[in-house]
Image (cartoon, rainbow, N blue to C red):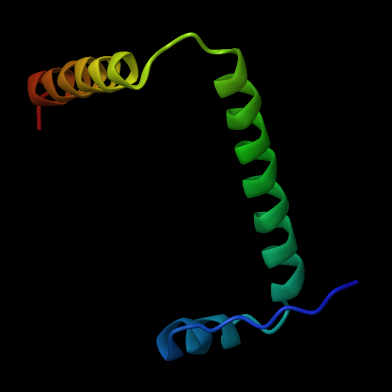
Length: 76
């Protein structure tokens, strides 16, 4: 197994220290594994996609507008 050193903000480390029962190395390993799984999925999805970057940007804007309209219409 390889060793990795991470830098954290002091405040974050202090908060983590309030949970001594947590195995923070395992939490980090799981987070890395999940992120890698997500990235591999996106890579495979992208390889099969016929969308152009222009198409993707257009669709993203349409989704953003739809979500924004839905949120604005909800009662506060």
